[in-house]
Length: 353
Image 1 (spheres, rainbow, N blue to C red):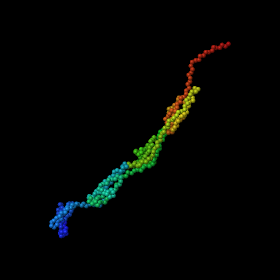
Image 2: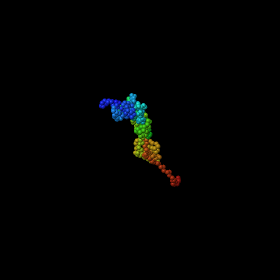
Image 3: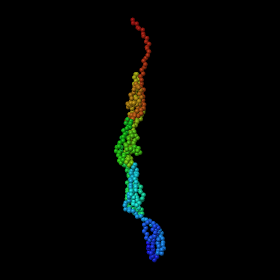
């Protein structure tokens, strides 16, 4: 290379480039990255060597006119009412050589070469672009994929009430209680019931507990995805009870029979102080096998009567029995026949003249 040196009388100075690879030349076409030294020589042969210059290769950007490849999204799903699964996978194709695939999940404000993590509960739009490795201002058109995560849908709360017939006490036995579906309705899954505050659930209507305890019945809907609706009370049982009356108190007024004119009579039974509540006062003279609300008739000649009493309630329950009196009939004792013979002295016959 030559140039005119006006500072030295306008003489021409030849500039040459030297390289360990190509030697010395005053014309240099750089086609290989290398370290180059510039030597300036004047007409007298004097030379000055400049600081070596390193020339690096500048690679041109690839064609980035096509849109970037898109990521592959596998969506999450709801199982046991929990969202799980879902993944964002790299594109099946790559960016052109000389460029790097980048991702953005904030609309392009920030870019990263790290693949985004899938959000199982919220949709995310993933932008992709190819960025030139040697010129960050050169990028491809963006592509986008929006994830569609699964949704755990909660069923609606059931409505309506059960048809409950409560048990009653008949013949001192509680029975007759029942539970039917009534107007209870649930949608979006399986209608289920609980009688223990929601700890356990069953699709079968609960069985009425005839003798208690009372049952508070909740209902909810269990969806196929495992989500359960809020529960609601749909009924409560009030079982009947059999109340046994208290045992009677007091004693009968008994007048025992006596023997008069060799005839036993005069015995009687009256209510006396006997009292019973909670039902009908009844009496038995055969140890409780048979009962009657009528006072027993006094057996004048016996045998003796042991009288017990109890109370029979309208629900058929009988109180325990208690002894309220016993008869002691009188007896007529016939004397024994006399024994022996009389001493008889007959008078002499009277002579008739």
